[in-house]
Every structure is written in structure tokens, then in C-alpha cells.
Image (cartoon, rainbow, N blue to C red; front, side):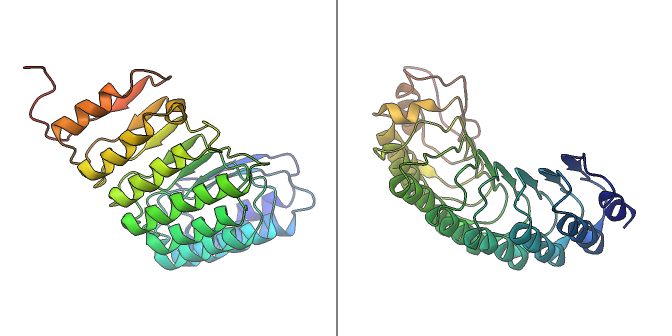
Length: 272
């Protein structure tokens, strides 16, 4: 509460990091109320409130922040037990609100589930995240259905907003129970004629992409669009030896400096 009061008196703070403080839902609600109340005078553009146990109730407070405060460039909500209902409220608000300034959005480790991914699909379809650069949705029980919808939304944005151009450089979808349908949608994104070759970091680790999924991604390797990637993590996805080796052979060009293919139980990486 004291932090909330202090915010009303300070017009110079641009980055507010209060992560790992066990603030809880009431505390975060007071802080968000102060930000909204002083929106005409304060300069906060980065709000980091991860690991504060804000829960579902805190998710509703974040919903109000998104709808009533348009200056945020960075919003980090990781590890807050927001859950499916709170996540849906937050992402639905993004789907209905032009978040023109938002560049970094982290809602990882909150178990927001597939419904929230579908709402984010709508946000991209509606053009409400035109300047997003970094999107961290890791460890949220999205399932292949949710992952597919999210990527389809990005594909729709690329196809329909050619005058804006996608800005997304980092995408973390790890630990979400994603499968081959999400991989297929990703391949379609890379193969889209309007894809701006912007994505540099892609994390798909600890999912269920499997051999079918890697086959879809291999098709994208035949085109230069895939080769903007610098860091690619597809570890723990149950790839077969043949698919892994063929994937590596496809990376003979481009700018990739790091690839993680660990924990696939491949029988051999050596020639015989």
C-alpha cells in the first residue's frame, strides 16, 4: 500500500520492478489503482510484477490496467498463479484493446491454458499487438489446440497487416504440451510470402512436436524465411534420429548460432 501511495507522488519513474515480493492480490490492486489514477502525470512504461502470488483476483486488476493505461511497453506477470480464469480476462482485454506501445509481454508459468491462447489469437487478428517484440507464454498448459490458434493468429496478422509488419523477435512456447499442429502452423508462418524474417529466438522445448511436427518445420527450411533464427530450442520433443539429422542438414545456411536438440533419446548422431 505504501508503494501505491508513493507512486502518486513520483512523476519520473519509468521502470517499476516489484517482482518476488509476495505482494498478493490486494497489494497489486492498490498499485494498479495508483497507476491508473496518476496516468496523466506518471511515466511508468515497464511494470514487472512476477512472483507475487497475485492469483486470479490480481489477474482482474491487471485486466483493468491494460484497458485503462496505454503507456506500457513491458508487462511481466510470470509465476503468479493467475490461472485459466484470470488469464482469460487478461488476454481477452488485450484482444479488445489496442496495445500499441506493448513490446514485451511475459505471462509464463501461470497455467492460463488454451482459452487464453485463443484470445491472443484474436488480439493478433484484430491487430492489437502491432509492436510486440518478445512474447513469453512458457509453461501454461496451452495444449496443441491453443498453440495452433496462437500461431494462426500471428499468420493472420502477417497476411492482413502488410503495412505494419510483424515485430516479433522472441517467442517462448516451451512446456505447453504442443504437438504437430502447432508445428504445422509455425511452418505456415515461415512460408508466408509476407513473413518479414524477424523472429530470432524460438523456444519449443519440452513439448510433443514429434517426428510429424519436425517434418512440417523441415519444409520451411527450404526457404530463406526460416533463416532469421539465431537461437532455436526444440529439446525434449521426442524426435527420431532420422528427423533430427535431416533437420540439422537443413540448417546449412542462415544466421543460427545456437540450437538445442537435447533429450530426444536418438540412438546415434554419428555416421555408420
